[in-house]
Image 1 (spheres, one colour):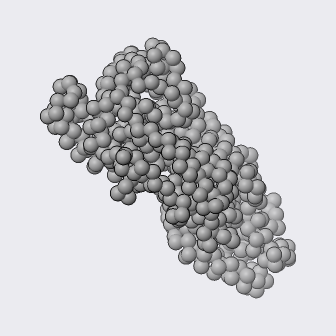
Image 2: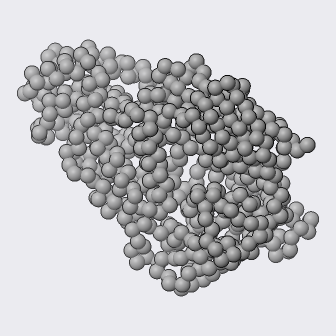
Image 3: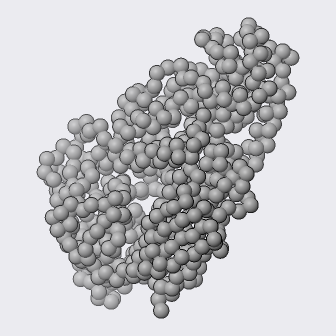
Length: 207
Length: 360
């Protein structure tokens, strides 16, 4: 959760900017604290898109390295966080283009990686995401992970904010309409723990 | 739905921090320096400015033939002079504000050159060029040079032998121009109109320092106005304490108190940002603010603003300060209308505009 006390937000944002300035001035090591600040959320975003821990690790590393190399392009007119996620979004779109067989890959990976230490929440999230298009997944994840506004998501994905808003409403309806026990169990990996998922799912959607 | 988003947000990373791994990989790389779009745009203007200048300088006989020759060759791409209008640059040269020291020092096969210097009494900017090594980066990496020769470290600056103190400045590679660093000091400096500037630069793996001594002498015609003019809408007010106008820069110093006014659109989930100030001349031409800082927070009720803007094309009869806010989404402090290079959509507060006479 983002802090809600204005002072805290300002301080955090100000700190990040100050660290960025130091890095730009040649204090390379200061960048490590930027990585630690953002890596967990970045990992989450990449993981739920890529569905594979190994690929996620590579992607997260690549994003932070690219951000470092291009840091001079960053100006304070956008938040550093949004700028970083734009880079991540573009990187994953490129990966996707290269692979060119999105769904096939996702399913394949799911079969290869039977759930290891997966929490009920995670399996609900994963199942729900399979009902969304790649674009919808990006929107939902960006909104969830960093609580971005439609404007920011629009900027990150290069789509008009109004369009993002519509797409978000659509994906929301899609998720609300979907009932896990109605034909949603074609994916073998989900069938095992269907009960848990349904409970978790209902709880999540009721809120 | 909120819960789903919260679950996603709270997902754990199933491994330890990758910061070491990433930093190791970064260790072999350097920060790339590429032109910002504004620099590219300015280039065309600057090219023609320099071309005309060369002729103008010789014809009018203001400077020595050597200086004229230098000016003809101003490497305008990434020049510290780019972005300054032709007339103003001419004035700046006449007043000793823009100079081309063209000094070079060579140690151990590496040559550093100080090619351009801009000092107008309120800001100091110069560039150092490196020759003799083929490397992508000019700046020394923090973690040490790894035994690599040729990175330039942050130089020490002296004025008449005493270290120059400042509170805000930058030290950066020059976009679009390899092998060059630009130093820019804009706040907290107190320097006279005439002094000897010493630049002590160090290059990695070279023991001897690269020292440059540059006589600086400007005719300081900085127009300093202390209008002490206040504008208020009842709740928010600001007082312009000082305006400094030089051929190449404009500084605005003001104090504000009170709550930033909000338009009907800036209510509910939206609110107004802190107050920003545009400056236009009597013809309505806006000058660029060097840097617009954005803080992701509720605006405070008191600010001391000290901001540097570009110079005016010509000294205006009057200037108008146009306060504005941008609209932020309160939940995450994102700015409406923000895009690359633009802070956001501006909401000008006409009631708070203030016109200040500059010339009688």
